[in-house]
Amino acid sequence: MTGRLDGKVAIVTGAAQGIGEVYARGLAAHGATVAICDVRDPSATAASLKTAGHRVASAVVDVTDQAAVERFVQGVQAEFGKVDILVNNAALFGGLPKMPFTEIAARDWDRVMVVNTRGVLHFTSAVVGAMKARRYGRIVNIASTTLYSGTPMLMHYVASKGAVLAMTRCMARELGDFGISVNAIAPGLTMSEAVKQDYAERDAGKGTLAATVQRRCFKREQQPEDLLGPLLFLASDDSAFVTGQTYLVDGGAVLQ
Image (cartoon, rainbow, N blue to C red):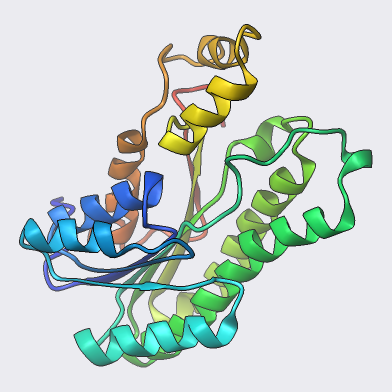
């Protein structure tokens, strides 16, 4: 078992910063060519990866825009010849106001659902045609442990990640005959820069973060780097006979 990705081409969505950037850097460090996209300009991250000697492409892409997604995927395929790995990371979470589900406006519900679920659909649909032809692919969807704990006051987010888990299982059933694996990673509360800022503003004096840490078997804050091992396993040939599964990475807060 090596976890090496030499010769592989990976797309990571939502990779301009935060956890997505960590995913992209980890994949590149293990040999993959990476294509990153985000609604924010990812060119600075791409430039940093190039300076480190990695092959990389980047673009501003809204995952809810199917035509834009297809153009990006076609461009990656034209430049690098293929797509082996897709990491569906782009999602709305940091900054979402917590509120009872009865107070979530329809437009806010729809916005979260469109980004967090339709984005997965658009990107996966765009890459699977060529993957089927090559009879090879590794798709990793990013879910959340909130769907196991029923985290209150964020029902739109929790529901969207529950949908991602359901989509992962359906995709695995439909794509297995083509040699394409589809798995999910469900992170716990991970201290990306956006989450740190969010909790600094909303959690001051409330102890919510400390309580989250205390529920874990490993009593510390979760870092984006904690997610790299499972991602590299699922993206590599080490997981060749694994599909339709969800890996919970939360320090043991939720036990399955």
